[in-house]
Image (tube, rainbow, N blue to C red; front, top):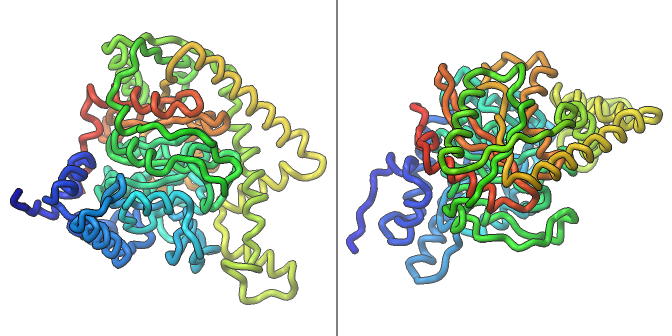
Length: 494
């Protein structure tokens, strides 16, 4: 067929499914697609701050190689030239991995994370590294040591966090796909704030090898995209067993992207009355109830469930996660790699000066909380008790998910808040994760999908949770809602 070149300025708006068709037919090249997104980033990202590093040369080299192999009739991977943005918490060989921290400002890993290996094997084109809260600690991307990221729907508002750069990049059409990490809601909350889809897989579904750890028993890498099928495709490309990660699950990876169009028959959606209590924004409640009505209109049965220990999730999380952070971040001491203070009197002073200079306030706060909770005389009273509560939360979900196929809830108590609004109120910021923390404590897969807009024009998300390793079901349930609405098709005007 004769080859026609689409207008480069239009390419970032084209859905992933159509991009793959154009790439396969030869009417679009991987280089053209990469250049279109790189140009959009160059034109618009100064006002958003989504990217910390754009690897233009590396992206174009990868795209050229994909085009060359395609021309020569050689096979290409399932992502086949699609651009992807990486949260700057996954190691990239030869490219800085900063975790948005001064501590790692000049750190260049000698290896790729498992997820990066899988993306390169699938022939994704890595555009660069995107912004985040420092060491993934935060819910607003204001804790980045370099600059905040702004919400593409309203630059005065936060994109959420800690994967705010990933969500903003997808919403702004800087990349059709992005990788984030989720320790307590850090994929789902920014996805909701930015009007995109974000999925936290089952703990162990995606290897953490090469992920700079925040809280090892909670961290999980996952995909963000503009629609459910694109999210399924990206998950399919990064999921799988990795012997280098002892927590990686040895389980088959279903063809998520092929199966997500099939509705769940006899669907039972669970909801907890406690999720609609005091503190929930009226626009958010209305959007979530409308989403439940969408499922009801498709024949789903809505079932009220009880999650009696969910009210303890925030307290348990903010003992467990800081305790693990205290342990994991002890390695950043100025000895082997990373920042080292220039002036100090002795070894102990070098440790203190290095960490004092290179770590931000929120990271220091969580290290101190965790160190206190783990200290002699307090371990049993705080950390051990939090672990027991965590088990009770998991048992609540196990019982509920015996009765229903999925659980629906808000993602966050309100739409995106203003930048600076909560930065000096840590407790209020922590409560922004009220609805998302439990999935991490229980190790469940969860997804945020677009479900409406507030009266101020800010996106609102719907959270869906499923049993462990039921990502396929989760995606199918999410697609049932997406098929009946057009929220995912709306885009911010930049």
